[in-house]
Figure 1: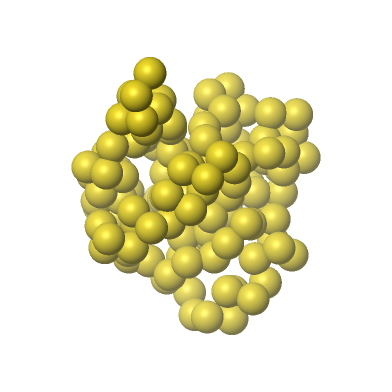
Figure 2 (figure 1 turned 120 degrees about the horizontal axis):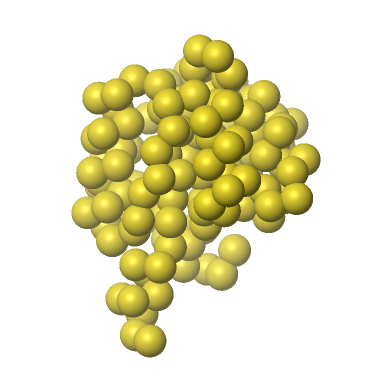
Length: 130
């Protein structure tokens, strides 16, 4: 298997309640070469993470039905979700950046990310053997 096939095998769960932002994020992630699973709220994210076990989760924080913080906690406490990196993907201010660990996230980044910065983020978690 070559490295291109290895990249294609990786899956990112994109969790975002705004359809346009979710679609744009999906487009960028797929254009970099990764598969995408989508969820529109924290409950769907928990369900998808538990059943499909993605390689990385990009999670919005503010969502209806179940926010990203609650969802991340549920995923972290599930058998299948303990080792999945979860990156909070938020438009909130920088106050969240230093509190990633306390919310169950591996990292907090501000959205939107352009393709170059998204590639850096994805490579950080998907190419380093996390």
